[in-house]
Length: 390
Image (cartoon, rainbow, N blue to C red; front, side, top):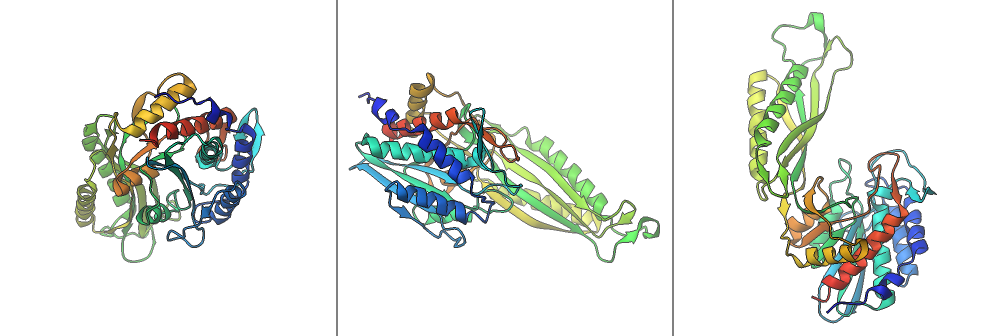
């Protein structure tokens, strides 16, 4: 039976939503230091009359925020999950310019999180949710390489999980039903001895920078091989180097070189096989080069996944988007790894990423159209109406 959505949409307050987003953006919250922003969100929710939980979730410096709202007996619980931390860039204070909210975290993802909060308010104030409920969670430790997702993983471990989850990351133009897994790597290449002037370098002295360059080419060759491994609505595998660091001056033979990049895969459950292949590549290069090569970091930020187009949460979100925007979202691939990968792999629930069409994420020029925040709040509230009753 179709539900009259006009009442719940009337309870979405544009100014209240903008005020919430502005208040969150006004609090600097670089990853591993989002405690003040969590306190701000908790205070806003408490002032709204919600009972706020503050689970430590393995990060006492910034306890997470959780709110539960029950609309009626039975039904499903829909989770809204967002991160409060921002990348480590100079702080940009909030302001509204040409109907865009600007400032640190406006795009990624305090604006989207504020939209989820407004959807929660509208569901409660309208009383439209006849069955099921909402779980809203917000946390630190999302952005890499500074964070390691420990707070999210602890929340999942401790049962702060719904029957499905929406994540308001800045992906608005499609609905991703698949995505790649990702590992971020840092490789250290070293030799014994001291740095030496190039003209005094002995012929048999291991060349860490040259080995680093060779490793970059090995990764390039690996990328060529694995780029043929593809999956529908997931994408193709890749290997990538984005940074190489070595030496102090142009004519010095250094003792260490660090290479950093990513390895992405499309087949769920193949993390160990991908790691073994990478370890073998390093071992072979170490033997050939005479250097010491160690994997300083291998951070798996999420596994690959695929979601069924007929999943109830997909159906509910598509119906909600059609009601708000006049058409369903095209189906596609998630280009990045976010917290949804962890919910799917560790909690076994459907996780959909959909947020505002924001700009400037991971820059000092973050901005999001205020109208987009309203659209997301409306889509989230209507998705709950379609999903929660079951």
